[in-house]
Length: 47
Image (cartoon, rainbow, N blue to C red; front, side, top):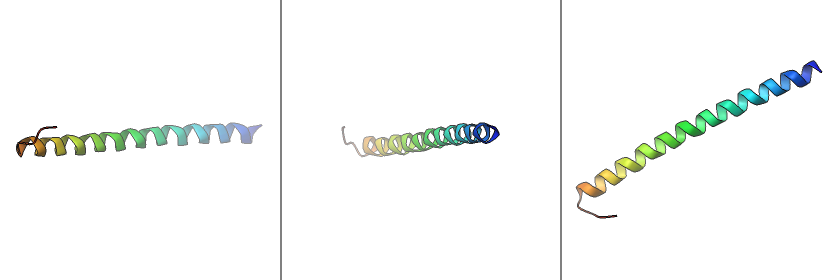
């Protein structure tokens, strides 16, 4: 029974860290996309 508790806690930690990493990657991607849009508008191109 103790091993199951440890395994469950381990799974929760991995799950939380995975979601945090995905959030960070999405934020980086959003910043990159906003930067690209900014350069398009500076060049006079329309989306």
